[in-house]
Image (tube, rainbow, N blue to C red; front, side, top):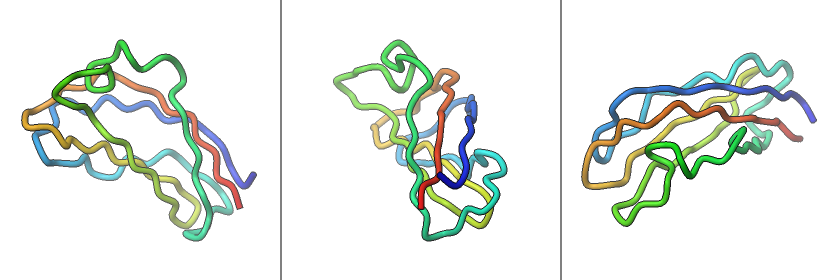
Length: 95
């Protein structure tokens, strides 16, 4: 384990076919671009708008490492805008 932490995200409305700008998960000292990020929700996401089960789809979360940081993007692959609820992600950088 190189680093670990948590990040809370509350973006506001996210249009169809769009992603948020990079969300900095915080300082992850020692992280390199070749490391792996594992993450999970800090609770049950199925009651949070944008992450709850829906016949029309929901949001996707992408994570990636950078030098001494981890970043996340929320992306909307649905046909309409989504105004997601606040969500906290726990993350860990592994080498």
